[in-house]
Amino acid sequence: MKRTAIFPGSFDPFTRGHEDIVLRGIKMFDEIIICIGHNAAKSNRYFDVDMMVKKIEQTFSTHNNISVMVYNELTADLAKRLNANFLLRGLRNTTDFEYENSISQVNRHLYNDLETVFLITSPHLAPISSSIIRDVHRFGGDVSDLIPYKLP
Image (cartoon, rainbow, N blue to C red; front, side):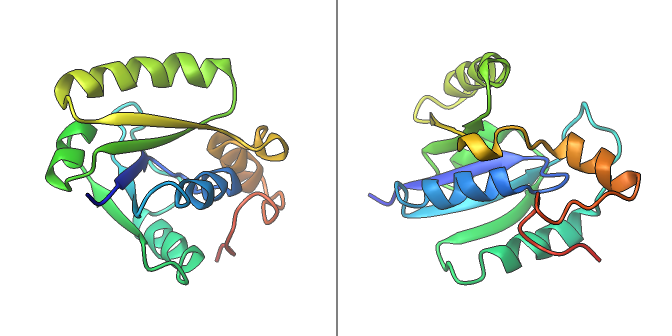
């Protein structure tokens, strides 16, 4: 049976930490689908979603088993529709765990065959977050070391 994982998130922007999770995760799964979702708690994106899809696709252009899509539905419903039995998530700290654990339990309730696989962020990437990158970029700071692609 094919092991397909989805890696859901708002990815505003997609960071080196996200890249690290995908590259480590692909060693465990046959396919990873990076799924950019519409987060109801975040009303406006900082980076255009279409631009982010292109940047992520460029980042993984040499991996034919990593793809990117945009979705606007429950993550558990998306996983079921894509025949994905795994959610891939990265954890930087215990705060991330508390948040992700609750989501994992609800997803498991909604789609019983859905297992969440948590990977601990590599230590040198743990301080990186999308919100920090947005703030640094907004005020003209250099974020090139924090993301795996060049911004326009």
